[in-house]
Amino acid sequence: MTDLFERYRLSLPQTRTTLERVDSWWRAANHVASGLPGGNRPGVAAVTLTYAHLNRMIVRRQQRFGFVLGVRDGMAALEAVARLEGTRAGDPPTGGFASVGGRSYALAYAVGMALDEPGLTVAALVDEDEAVTAWQARSLHDPRVDGAVLPILYQPTMSRDEVRAEFRQRGWEPIEIGSGVCPHDTQELHRCFAAALYVALDEIAALTAAAAADHPQRHARWPMLVLRVPTDWPPVDVVPVDWFDTAGRLVAEIAQAAPTGEMRMSADW
Image (cartoon, rainbow, N blue to C red; front, side, top):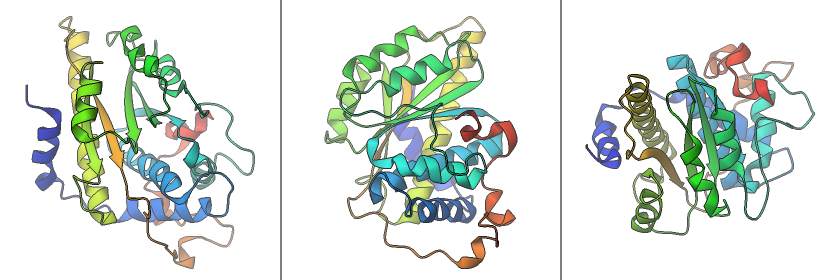
């Protein structure tokens, strides 16, 4: 089997889709989050970036996703994206995610969300504070009857080789995004994230289909993403005032980057 990271690298030239709408939605979410407490700029931007690209896949594939946050630095982003999606008007999100300090349980929470939920993919954005034991929770996962979990490791201090050595032995196949792989230019980061997500979700679909056909790949490594961004990212931004209407809602052209109704990840919060 071709290494997932190599498949990701090979897919980059074919990722031609313009991402302007996703970029606008992401920038709008950062703008809203900047006026809310909780988190720092890189952490918030990483959460909104992840969320925006998951939304893109929901819209394109009409696929169900859940989102779990295990990064304390990005809490303001949860409120921001919920406001943009119209599911929250002031109350902080209380369900559908986990965010605690120290030895976190966000990944285990994500696995629990996926149990007995075929067709659901739960993305879990976590950092190195995630409990080491949580990475073993995949052993509870049965792809014949359960949904899938896509871990996204944020800002690891380990090198790429160290990450691969650490997580491949635990049954995960890391796909690196960001510093050292993609240029720091935000547009290139969008392109890299889109390509990585395609590869990861296609691999999840293939492994799930094999299990459903009673040919489970018992020793296969399931994909995970590794997101690294500069500490001074993103650059200070000023969004155009005409991106919002007089009621403070996103204009329709940009709002279309996100799903509607029950397909919204924030609808379960």
